[in-house]
Length: 127
Image (tube, rainbow, N blue to C red; front, side, top):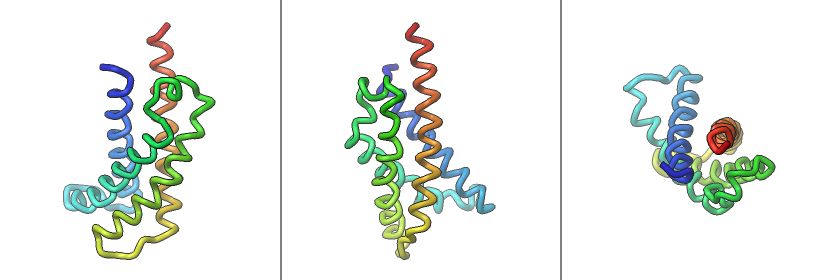
């Protein structure tokens, strides 16, 4: 499996894990919340891939240099508000700015952790 495919699959898994953690912090865990989790997961996923592509987070030159990891929170800065608006449209509710801030910051942190792990493993395997 090449690096780009691994990143894409890892990003999907990271967003899924972050979504579950977010719901768990509110005591909303279990199969009964699955459809509601989907209304958060899919908008975040779509928004993340749009923003991450825009700032080249799948480019080999970018993912190989940790000094360019600032692009991860930058991508989430754009992805989170879009995700919250898409989610609000799906749920026929209002987009909450505070939710965008919390969603963006926690997902940015989670993606930094995942991408950091990816970088370390890829570097170690490259030696």
